[in-house]
Image (cartoon, rainbow, N blue to C red; front, side):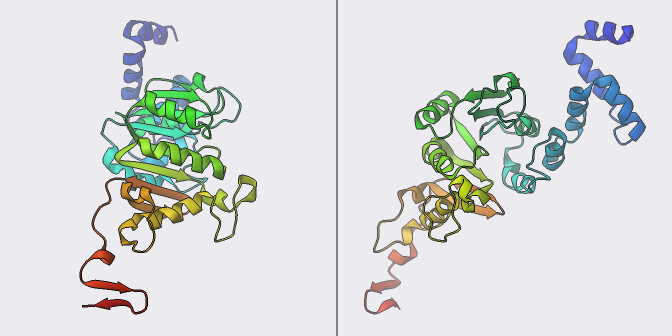
Length: 285
């Protein structure tokens, strides 16, 4: 082991890790070699080694880093589809919720996954508990509540340009609505706002409701955004203002992607080929 210590001291941490990566690059599929490498490298470096080889596969990265975005849920396949264009870009990602509960040294699994998958991105996160111990290069964590409008505005100002926002926080419906109302205006044009675990919209423990006419849940918000998306078709009532800034809403099981952008294609209901009348309905001419 003295040779290992000598080599590490001579090469420095960065080149030492690169040297180990090179030596074990062809042996990751050998079970015995995996056990040997795990012992030599240590748990953390072993995970990073495997993550480097699977850095283009978000689902595998989710399993390696222990986030439930794969396995517990089936989110990573959708993230890969919607975020493919970001892989090699410089951008800022803000995720609400670090994970690990009140324990300061636990959590951050998805943050490390995003860091590996997006090699040029800056990863930011907020959590109601102190998670500063989990910060590392390109991962910055702030402490505060996602239901605190003043705090959210201050964080958005600190980050500056916000290109992706992922709400994986408390999943309490009130908190989800507050976060969206405050943070969506800070999102850049072309940016994506993601809401995870929308099953809590139907769970009373999280302020949800199974009533189809509920107005204060995350899914009620999503339904209203679908109407807002077609704001130019409103003739007799005032359309939701937010519709001007939404170009798509994509819904999956417990997962929603909302893309921000200029939405002014022109409404069909206002064009000359249709005339609206209260008594006669729609006439084509």
